Image 1 (tube, rainbow, N blue to C red):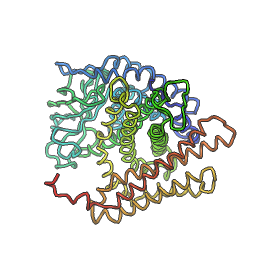
Image 2: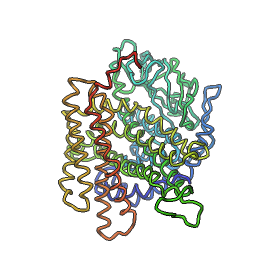
Image 3: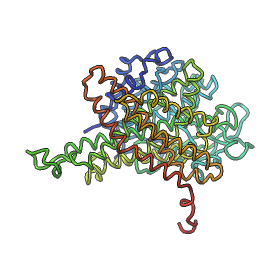
Image 4: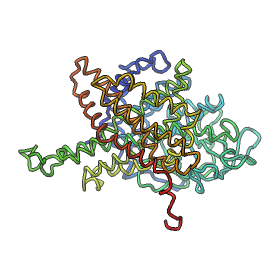
Length: 595
């Protein structure tokens, strides 16, 4: 079975749960009534299923080719698919209309991106990196830089990258050695080597715009002295078209366990011409605008790969005949029953379904708050949106990449021996999804960011607002008999998250190791609490449909999956709290030389 985009799930979230039609007074939303949104998502689904999905295994098996002249050839079919992608206007979906974008809300763009990422994660990385470069220039570029670069990045005519990591440094960007020498005419000479650069070189676009972190001569050491530069592959001429070739080259491709269709490059900047973007020594702050968008996108990638793997496993479980149900044959005329009848197979599929459906809601809900942060006329709503985006970005990135990989692993288990072969798709989903837990900041770094920076930011304002929102939902809906299990589950998870937050605040300052040792447990507890809230919101929306006589089994099934989450997934929150409160003693006790 090929991947089937979950448009029905998207529309349920946008219409019934998030109720985006309430925001038609805001920019972007005014151009996105539900009938238009449905048309957009239907076409996105068609393109993802019919064009991108068939190329997924092609990209995996053939991959990219580095040529002797430093060019890179993408997998067969990618170039033609990208041309269709651009002609369809998909790269411009969420971009600023001033620069040729369609200006649709980010929550709509995320729904479209989820489908393309499930269908072909490697392909979707090319426009994903481009939009990240677009965002950085949109936020920090000069008017001239915006005029020159944004229309072509928004349309997908030009590609984009971010060049951060170097051979001697990974997350610690204060160690970068790439140098920038000012020439006195507004340009700089950029020299240094960058590694693991996604989309660093390819044949999909006529130009590639690299955003490069470098240190200007004489700048302070560490992260305080890093600046950000625009370094095009081809220098734009007077008309803004690709002109002279810049001195930036791909030295080779990384050999990877997955995402073979994505060109992951070693890049050499050899006195390349670059232009400063933003202020000197403030490059890292501007790059983080791009990185935070990418981190949300990577969280979505984790969920998207989980969705594709789950679909493959569910179909396999319906078709694979093996053994008999313990309660008696279910396929009496056949030689055996489908493995879907076996409780342990159903457990794995239900675990996956319960996390995927609420995870999608959590990502969309957060993206909506990002939209409100940009356009709502109410200062308090904008501040809350900004706070939630900052607080939840590390949670969404780490939690859903970890869970997406586990879902892909369970999907392989459902396939049994078949899953361990390349005749079935789950091996690729497992391999592709594993990178999501590492790039754009490893999941451990996300947990460190959460407990080390985000919890205490602005006096803990974002965390307190989130907890207060959960309390308000329980207070408003706790007496509704149809919602009582969901309200009680949410109240319990919220109490555990609040206890964990207080423990972190009380113990983290006196013993930083204690906070960091439990940081991943805290992040998982936060993620599970967010899922509990999403299930409560979805249950409320499904019950409202049922109450007005809608007999579609979609809504009754939604409640069944939600109750499974409460009984079989949410209890993991208690384990996370217990491990967190154990502190760091056991973690740090073993002498270094005993490892």
